[in-house]
Image (cartoon, rainbow, N blue to C red; front, side, top):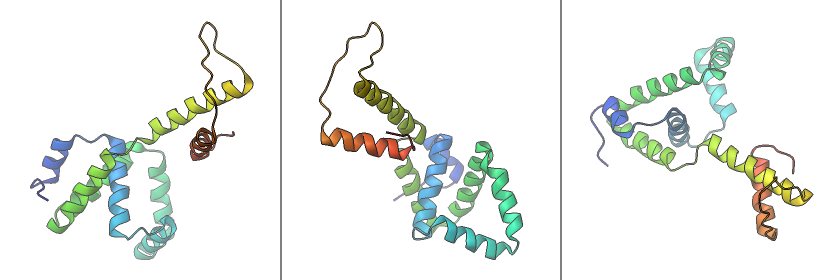
Length: 155
């Protein structure tokens, strides 16, 4: 696989959205850590830093700041890009991230589905709109269940 010479060139070719950068980082980390669990990685980081309170403070600072999360992800990936052996992994991570549905879109789909399901079950309908009743089969119930469980909505 041929990749651009610099990480900046790669980003300029791809123009990834912030969410895609974060998903690509998750994919990259999953590959290089052999799918370690989050708590395992956190324990390793705390051991490496030596001060668990510093690590927790840094995590708390990042939790609510999406811009900082993206900046840290880009900085880390840019550093890893300097190793030519890692470039193909990073390219694969961004390619995989580009094929995934963003979390917010999946959540919106699930919410719309949930509202429709409740409307069908309760017999409610929007005003001045024709009602099309489709049979609810076992497979559509399974899909509805999986979607609602994914965002913790009650059925």
